[in-house]
Length: 117
Length: 110
Image: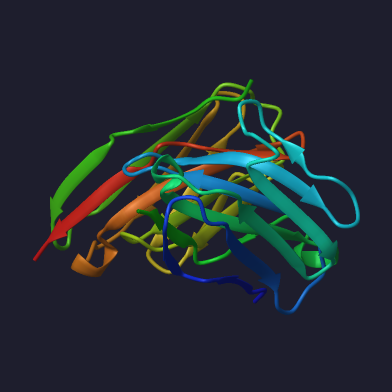
């Protein structure tokens, strides 16, 4: 089945630094990728939708200058948390929608636990 | 705006029991509905996907049903095992976006 690889799985950083999270579709072309955020004991909240080659669409309340999303190829999307602060500590998960037979399904990455000190 | 509700929020059962998890949604114009499993600190594992034209899907001990008209889906787990302990999420996709419920945390006691 289709696989989405997300790295890193866990990152600890100092306040003020930037962190980049990668999301790769390993065996299919992902024209659309989604980035979600999950606070403890809460469900996933969509942050933004990225389409290959175009600017990401951010959900209301998500700062686009804070969470930079790049989807430069059909197999890679990145989320950069800029000038991270402790309130950005959360679980971030990406998902990808494939083309063809796999188009109707969302494939999820394994997630990234971000802890900002 | 689509809203997805999962009941109960938590469930604890003894090993071997059959159980049902519920998911309801407000906008019936869905593209599909998917059930996921999430272990603590981990990502999501897709369990079952039901297209809007389907009524149910089965995989092993799992059976998911979909009733679009009433805005409901159920996930049936037969002969539960301790390894089934996890949080189960349903996600409804329509208009290009997926909306998740808050999940049901299942504990299966040996």
